Length: 222
Image 1 (cartoon, helix red, strand yellow):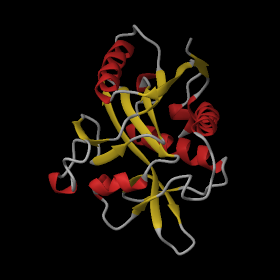
Image 2: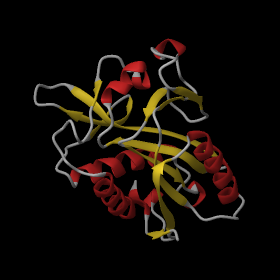
Image 3: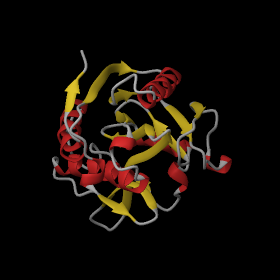
């Protein structure tokens, strides 16, 4: 898997402060992905936080939007169903050129999962994949499985956009307005409610080192 998705070409790494408007982020992603596909821009990983909102993927079931008036709802072209974004959650938009990374979508998605798993391991959190459930999961001492990170991507001309979200310390009650990813039988976790005091900066550092091990070197944007 690593051989397929790894590249020696540095990826730009950008972190936005404060809360980033979702519509702006979505338009920027599309524009950047098109520029990468045309050979006019470098690959980019862009880390943001959003104000509270729900997004609907291409497989979203309207019945899973339990509280449609609670927050803004954004239709989006990524794969997956309904997800929540908000303060305390790190969203990583991943714009990579899979023409240089094996052209293997399954390997790419597994790589995104492994990226999160390896980053969380730096906080002594054991996170895992689950067959048939895209994303990253933790198991409580009583056996309950909860989702700590979501993945939803889209590819156009072999360039990815959208990406990942990792729960650091969001208000988990905000997930109550949806059936997250259409999964009713499992809850949602965060680093905070697992008892970890990690900050967003702490997670960013872990994500950067784990990304470089799997996908290749990064360079900080000016």
